[in-house]
Image (tube, rainbow, N blue to C red):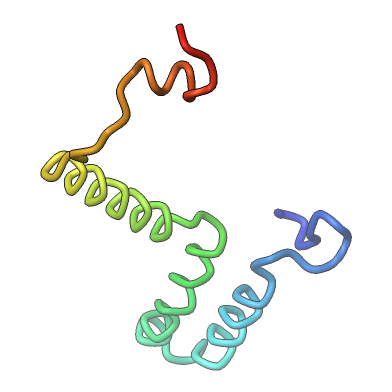
Length: 92
């Protein structure tokens, strides 16, 4: 959350990452651009916590690999449409 407070009034879920990033900037503030480069991993962690881009990308890759594997090896004993419709409960 932009206010720094979570949904239930406590700290937001990314508050710890923000504190780590601020601490890195404070410690490395006198080094100019070199100090900012040292804080790049902390900044990356904070952005991942906010936006979950790496997690979404990883999920999309896993789903694509699963679809590709399913297409390469279709199930031999797949249920027929009639079996799915009736679920074997009623004879039509």
